Image (cartoon, rainbow, N blue to C red; front, side, top):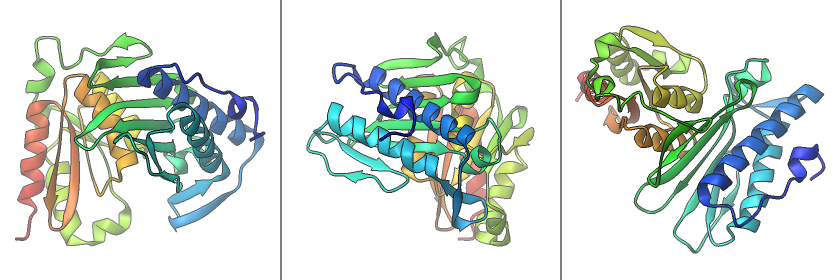
Length: 275
């Protein structure tokens, strides 16, 4: 690869998994940003708001190359098509650019994200927002941090875990076409109207990082692929927050936040069931 200096940086296989994840999202994010600065072309995937750029592919190719060299026994799954069957029972899940629509239109609200999972659950997550220089990291073996500083929103007396949904702002995302489907719109509306405020920024991993650090009260979204869910799930859990998922009207909904808020989100979503 010759798409700038970041694409050529080889990482040390001796790094532990948290160090490796941090380095991968930093390098992937910086590579994507450099490519955007140089000018990009995009193509539509499934809709006008679902786009992919050359930066997505280059960033994923970089992460794939480094993982195959540094963790040859692990599996790899990427949003842009990377798929490697491993032998270790662990799989790295890559989202090279989460929030591609934002990325393409000059917003800073996008990131590179990665998770490591095994057959039981997610083990760690790393999220890097390049233009804000924010790196969230955490997992089962390491408490959640933002740029190396411990996240304490859910640990200072546990108050954040007790906050009711009605007291909190909720981050979410729903494509406009889904609002025309009552099976999706009814549970979404029930959850949305239960919160104190709504925020829709267009990058689930950036949202989940901010749920973990306390900037956002909670988050919910339906039909999330693993690369949109697992990095943030790992970090929220490592911060002491709660995560959950529930099926309503044939759609899977995902939630994160404090214990009380997540329980109330679940109940609100279920109240929109037609069965």
